[in-house]
Image 1: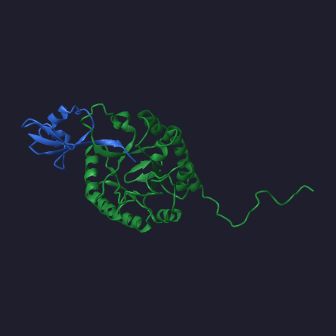
Image 2 (image 1 turned 90 degrees about the horizontal axis):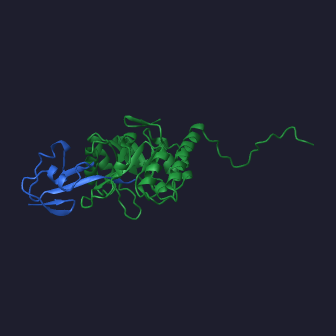
Length: 66
Length: 254
């Protein structure tokens, strides 16, 4: 199925979770915040939160700014 | 001591973390500035480039209070979304409300700024609001309950220093909450002047990150803020229209 991650389309397998997605893009260790369809997902439930077709995911972090 | 919400700070200099030439110069400049509050922006992570360095991994976060901004937001709803994301990091509950209303001047949109500030206060954030030097808006924001007012000295990144001293003084005089002069500071004398006027603190970024030597400028800004504050507390002499001798008129040598 197709999801949108940070503005790009990505193919993921059915029933995969936010945790799987973070593993796949190799950022599980880093300090990030994840939004699924504009709902912030608590870190504690990344591995229980499944992705569905058409989901819009934003993975954000802090960058330099004033 | 500077009190913002529940927290107190020794340093009255807040430092932005954008646009440093290297991570090393940034890290060193932050150290030398002795700041206790660092600002950040919230952005999409570049997940398609694993090698992109993460700023936060370069700094020891235990030493600082983090003040994420909502830069990039054009509406109150966008501000609230960014603020919630920032707080979900678990690292901070302070937020710098910043809603740009004009691309040329980067001046804030007063209506969206007010709406966003009110909403975030309802959600329990410690709200520091970036505003223009509008005296009435500053008053209204204080009445709404924001924890600090952050009037710009001049447009963001312009380095023009304080262009409306009178408005800034009015804001400082009327405020019972901290006034942090944010944006437009170009040189140490600008920062010192803001503090001499009675500002509770100064927030700057480009003045340090864009300096020829950001590390030395960070130190200069630290000293300028301390110096300006001392001068304010000491109480400057009144200005006179004519001269007044410092040396005695008596016991002249004849």
